[in-house]
Every structure is written in C-alpha cells, then in structure tokens.
Length: 357
Image 1 (spheres, helix red, strand yellow):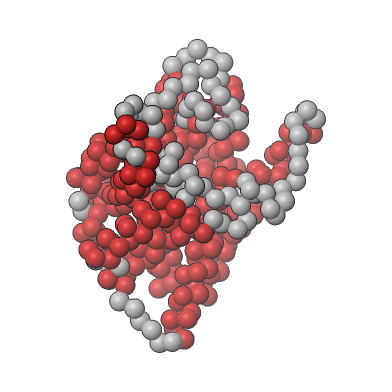
Image 2: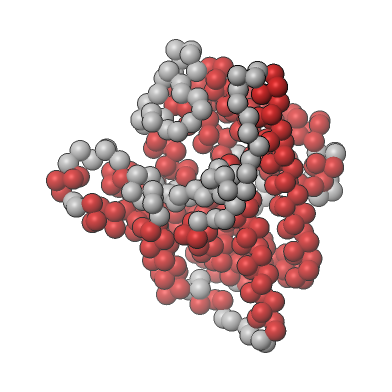
C-alpha cells in the first residue's frame, strides 16, 4: 500500500504516461521504477489477501468470513468511491466551473479508478466462499498441498504467463498485467490475480511450505531485480535498439510473458521471505505505519496529483521531487490518520477497534 504512493508520484515524470500532470523534469528512466513496482506489487497484495482470507475462514467460519470482508472491503470501497471519485470532482467543479464534472455511470471504463483492486478482491472472496460452500456440500476435501508443490507452481507460473500473453497491453508495452477498472472486470486480468489469491489461500493450509518457498529470498530478489526485470524492459520497450532485427514480435512477446511471470512470482515469494527474516518482530512505529497504510492508499491519489501540480514547473531534479511528493504526502496522511481518522468510525471500518501495541 505504501509503495503505491511513490509509484503514483513517479507517474508525472515518465514521458508519455497517461496522467493528469506532466512534470517538466521527465525522464524515461522512471519507467524502470514503475515497472519494478507494477510487476509485483498487486500480485503480492492478492497472494497475501488469499492467505488471510483462508485464515479468516478457519477462525470465523464461512459466514464470519463473508461478513468481515464485506465490512472491511465493501464499506471502504463504497465510502472512498463516494468521496474521491464522485464528491471531490464535484467539489472542484463547484469551485471552478471550468473543470467539467460528470457523475460516473455503470458502463464507465474507469468507474473504479485506482480502487479497482478492492472491487477485484470482493469478486475473489465471493468466488472463494462459493467454492468452499460447494466443497462442503459435496464433502470434497482437495489436497491443496499439490498446488504449492513444484509441479503445481510450475503449472501456475505457466498459466500466469499465458494470461499475460492474452492481455491487450501486457507484456506488449509494459512490465506487469493490465489494469481493469470497469464494473465487469476483464476476465484475463481477474484470472491473473485469482492465481495469486488461490496460491495464497493454499499456502495458509501449510504455512511451513510457504516459508520454505520464500526462504530463498536471498537469491530470488537479486535474480528478479537484476536479471529478469532488465530483460523484460529490453523486450517491451525501445531500450534494446536492435530487438526488432534480432527477434520477431511473436518471439519477443512470448519470451517477455515467461520472464514477467517469473519476475512476479519470484518477487512475491522473495519479499515474503525477506519480511519473515527481517520483520518477524516489527517495532511499534512499523506496526502503526502498517495500521495506517490502508487509509493512506485510499486517500493518497488526489493529494499526490495536487502535489505533483505544485512542483511540476520547478527545475529541481526529478528524484528530489518524487521524494518530496512521497514524503510530504505520507506525513500529511499519517497525521490525519492519527488525529482525525483512527479513533472515528472510519478507522474502525478500515481496521477494526484500536488495540494497544
């Protein structure tokens, strides 16, 4: 959630990026950071979501799981849509009639905007609950350990690659999957994230297996960031000047989809392994930061765009401006969460009752 703030802060500095603000200090190197994050951030999110969805099932039962997810996902999604997708644009229009406003419609392509991942999560939790209910009716207890065995993960990586290949944009011009923000999710994008969600849910049945897989983070992260990512960038961007003369489009795309799939899975497991090794006993400040991360992501985008606009004409280095935007916006949102949000119904809706560290 927190890296998403820096991810969006960098968008105004990437040439050709479809974004409402274009900074004067644009540089194509920002795409390297954007691809690094986009290729693994949401896969990691959905794998962790699947893990904790299965944990909620075990602790609360099927009905408790559904009620909890509707409260913590459906409620914040509806509230954030009302404020940031409808209310804020309407307020800007009132303040400045030159800024157009149109109420969202059900068939809008960008209906959920940057909140699409919560809508996807509701779909996946619903599918998970349905599978569990049908399995109980049929007295079926599948051996989920096969999914996270070597053969199962090989199949999953191959399916991930095929889904990437089938998407209109990725891997053809981007590292990472497409984004689907409409009311009816793109089936290919939803299936892509469903694979990570399903693997996470299966890992919850055997957490020691997840720890063993993620235990190779010392080689997984360097391989992904220093080998696979540069190769992916070379295959999907003009970074490799002689690519067209060396590889056909079909071969280039096919190779890119395999490497992007491997990148997503190695980064996902590698980051989990790193966290288990380095953050198993997080200090109090980190727990408070994690507690605020949901709020920060829901509220950050209007503030980031406004901050980008404020600094867009300054002749400062791009890296300095990205750090300034990210740091200042995180500070504002953290203060707002601590003093204006956490002890209110909004804080309870997002994270439940406040607990002592």
